[in-house]
Image 1 (cartoon, rainbow, N blue to C red):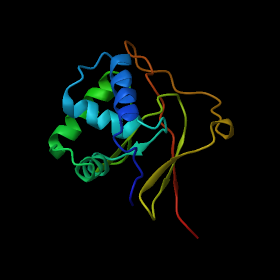
Image 2 (cartoon, one colour):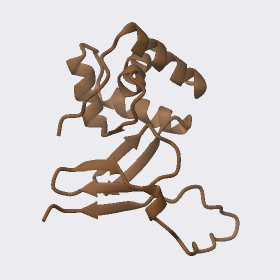
Image 3 (tube, rainbow, N blue to C red):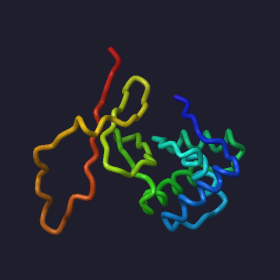
Image 4 (cartoon, helix red, strand yellow):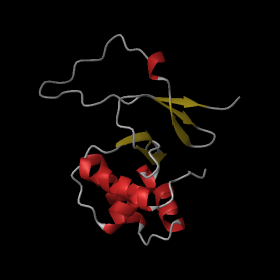
Length: 145
């Protein structure tokens, strides 16, 4: 599946730099380029490291897949993104950090937002002593009929 990314325009670069500043992430050339692809047009995205790597290559950015993984980890650590694990071999990185559920389309391997208002929990289990619930990820798996 091909993901549509922002082109790296001056406005996209400024948006990427501002996004990194919000997370206090050091703006290296590669981080700014990747951030600009992710948030340069203001759209929220669900990306895999491989998808972002391909978009970076297509935009002419010289970056390794390992650098993309490390950069996505830094973005998550800074609170700029959330990692959504759909199975043992695949994670998506979401630029929308508000709590919300997701649909995972098994046929196309696509992750999309699900309507938050339609998900309800009556309760969650108490965390073990000395722990707190940091986040609850809801991934609803779908298949085409």
